Image (cartoon, rainbow, N blue to C red; front, side, top):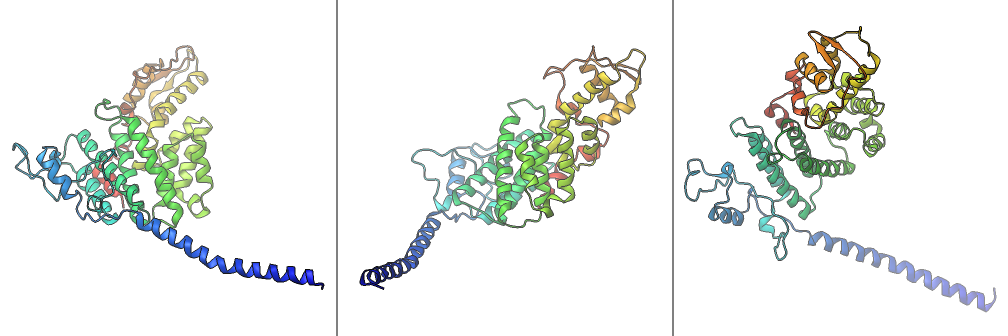
Length: 379
């Protein structure tokens, strides 16, 4: 080897040694930066459901909700706050307002306890009425819980538990308050928050195994029937989750919906439990309309009479509601018989038939469960 080659080799060797010596230093710097970022995340120290500062402020300004007042002081000029019942309310971020103060943030364990209180003691209680007011209160306080979670970047089991309970509450609310006036319940706002919770929950499931993942994967698919993204997400799940009974049933319902097969979809719907019905119910009115349209073409004849009871079983409705739905769509009902005609079928205007009116199918006990047995079932 000549002198030039030897010199180049020594130079390359020195460069390689220098490069290898710098690697540990770069790794240390990256680790320090990650540690700094982690240290900069606020950590809550408030161990009550409502920070003391906010509690006293709302008490002085007479802004306590009646669910938060000390019993017997509701009619006082300034009702007193019950520390064991008051819950931090949602507040929009504002310029100059410090939302990261540790004393105003609740740690994950307190957030989970707060959600348990809201869902189990308020939403599922039979003493707090009307339920539209219960919904408004719980909806706002759950939003505040998620706000604290975002600020603290909460993850792990507590995060999953909070989101699962929130999803169940919002699903139940969408069913129970369906058809209410907008001043009491806005389905679009409820849907926006429910979709956000579902998206966050499904993303959290990627971190590891979770006990109730199959149930909520199925609920997400049922709620989003017809969504290619929802179907693709389920098909990419691990085999052990995808092959579970809940997910398989949800996939079968989704397939029937995509194939525009209302008879099969309604037959499968009879196998759903109550919370799954809450998820899928917003699609059923359209499905029943499609079935009546299908039969109006397939059985269109002056001399053809179809038994009302048989049609009611297909629609999974009571006879009276079946007759009402037929009349809305121009299908003639005479006594216990239905006369289909493709020329008389009409698409109902949006206000002619309410989804809420169709919440009384054959199995009332299965499809109209009380709040305490539905929402309290959250784990």
